[in-house]
Image 1 (cartoon, rainbow over the protein chains, first blue to last red):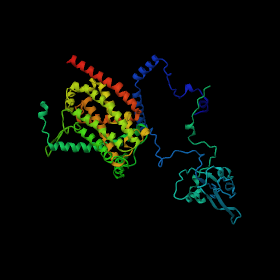
Image 2: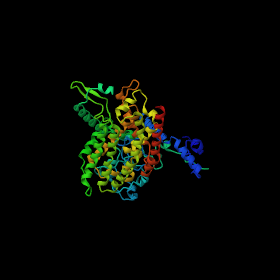
Image 3: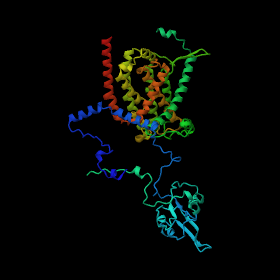
Length: 207
Length: 338
């Protein structure tokens, strides 16, 4: 949808369907007319036609509405705050986390625990990093505060598991090194979903 | 009856084979009907319906059957146990008994054994009365079931059964009276032979046909009139406390009744099992019954159901006068035309 189309707020000339509602009958004659009209208007057959049309649409025109969920998934918004991902640097493959501890500090439900130490090069190294997903409220502060874009929210929203531990360790959240080329950069909290253009609808304005 | 003498003699073996055939085929179709219903309703709502068990979900039937058979048979503590146990049998049994006097498939002779299997298990000469009476008796199932189960939804369900019973029965009788007057017989075979020239009775009696369809939907508890088990209002009405195979019997009965109504409508109004153009009679009757069945599902997808008081209003104040007027006009026309 172009901007020009979007700014056109003339509802009457667009795709809105206006309901053609009659006034409530006031006199006996009006009531009689309404009864006659409704008797001879084949409204029941309109209903039959609508259902048959939807059946034809579904079967022959590929407008079946079902998403077969475990096999098909709808795209989710990039703003969606699901299980965290720890990203790697694209050049070296090293994890981005510098162990500054800001995410641990800002976490309002105290679910991030990290321990750091100096490695042999006197660089900060993360020795322990866990997120307790029993406590996490997925507020997104950790991702927002991270100066290195190391901790971000991923797209894994199916969080049923036998053990909480299968999500919460640093290695589980870290991008696998062999899938580094597939690593998605986090688009940030203001990002729009990929199908935002299709979902956008104009609001009719009365003026 | 010149034609009757030319047919082979109907033996007991033929009748028994026919009865077993009806029981097996209709019970299977009744089960299959639930699958068809779920599929058609799903398509009309742009859903997929059952599809994971077997090809196209066809084995969903078997899965449901296994579930029904293995479910615990619960009889509520304060229920009247005998009536509670008997009520589903009434529904299922009367539905099949009604099919005894209905021509379901064309007659044939088993080649090697030389047993003639008639198209009707028992060709009683008051077939229509027998079938309608049996289907009406079938409503004792819901009535007794609702009252026996010591459940308020059941009681409301059986009260609504009584209302329904009182409403549609008079319309069924009066609407089918006009074709009976034209044919001058109560036997389905005579109805079929009357339309052998290719002119269906629905051409002469469109009003009676519509009235009969409406009353038939009320008789089989199909959707515009499914008020005795409407989920949104009274949980499940008369089947609230039923589980397992007893519940299944109610549904086999309901689907068998749907087929019976389809058969009656096809034979009395839509030309029966006569040949039509290049299509043989057996194909025509199956097509008509199938369309009638599909139409019931279609109506269920399209139309909302009505309140009990609206049903009584419709049946007594609209349909019954129409049916009476139709009978009177039919009589006058028959008197004038001869």
